[in-house]
Image (cartoon, rainbow, N blue to C red; front, side, top):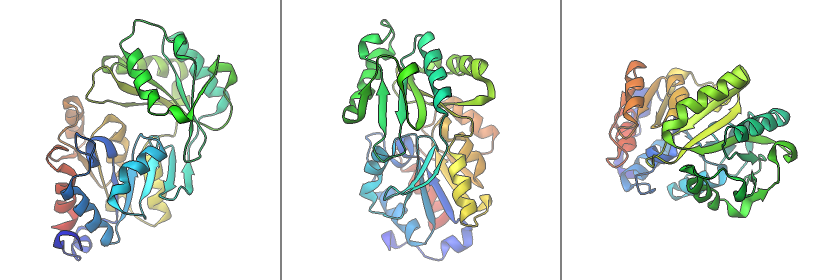
Amino acid sequence: MASGYRRWRSQVSGIKLVAIDIDGTLLDPYGEITPRTKAAMEAVANLDIQIIISTGRRFWTAREKVTPLGLQDLILSCHNGILLKRFNGELLYHCLLDLEFAKLVVAFAKSRGLYPIVFESVADNCQVLVEPFESMKTGYLHDKETIAYLKESQTNTCFFDDLSRQITGKIIEVVCVIPAKETKETSQVFEQRFGSAIKTIVATVPNPNRSFFSVANSQAGKSGPLKFWADQNGIDHRSVLAVGDNYNDLDMLQYAGIGVLMGNADPELQQIGSKLSFELTDRNDQDGLAKTLERHILS
């Protein structure tokens, strides 16, 4: 057993399911899994505690990031909880955006000067549907950030002249890359236009020119598949430990019996977390996740 962690600890803690974010939580600032974190994850898995990796990433990039753990029984909650899959790609749960409604969202995004990116298909390598880069409204800080983001998905990118009329298939979400300072205003504008028919999800990153703004099914969110899996396995929410660092982690941290916020979370988010009685652990460059697992399960 990794690092000599004692096997009986999980029975004392009562934790049966752990939900863990990837970027800013599982990964350090360099995008790596530290040896201490890897050892703690292995030890938790060896206690037969179920682990859900909960991320805004697509399935194939999420699986790529967690493969170094060597844990084949991981469950992956991707696209901010819109898809839930086993490590082998088996689909367990989904919460898609209606096609015709997605077209309306795309048209509205374009009318606001945004460049919508549509994720389609529940397959492991989902399609990334966009309009030609030349259609971007120039002069925005996020233009180059959007192009840089899309270059990560070149092999799965499909171009359309008019997304609002031409997209087909199973729509996961509509995403726009925007400056962090515009996230609140953008969310408010979309919520005023579409009301309770949608859910807006925001994930910030250290780069102030690059925040991810997502429009999804009104039932989307990381807590949805977490609750689904807990219910399927007879696990009470009080036996769930969730760890994250971003705004898109809030609902799963609230669902869990123990919600833990990383020390590298945005200061404003930390204030929100304090009001919601979340625990605050160390930063991701200080093995904050490993320390949380050790404190609640392994020590």
